[in-house]
Length: 186
Figure (spheres, rainbow, N blue to C red):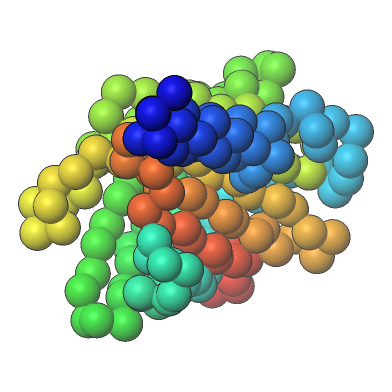
């Protein structure tokens, strides 16, 4: 075996082990069933309803904070159909708006659509957590790329929700978001 072939084979083995680790031990390996029977119960019809304040940070691929934001949200539900309107204000002065349209199944499954989401997002609420997977198209001024997103929301005892999201392109993490969502009185 030539030294080059030996090095190439070694690199492939290391890459394979890294991919296996990321699929089995990392953020993406969580499943809603991991939170079954754990409280407090996250119910999107209750926890994503009414006026909400969202505060968070976005980390770039190096792990450094690239942006901070505050968002005013308003959720409305009619049975198993819901709409969540989001108005973001970033530390750069930029603003953004998104309107999610949800359908909640009797088994906790969630289908989600928004104008900048490619296709339909799918997820599930179980126990104290909710997972939503979707493909997000960035605005043209941000490159217009389509990213694969995994959102995890975890409900705390006081009703606050911790949201952690990862954004990937070609399987490589390019950003991460951590935010809180909490109900506000008007």
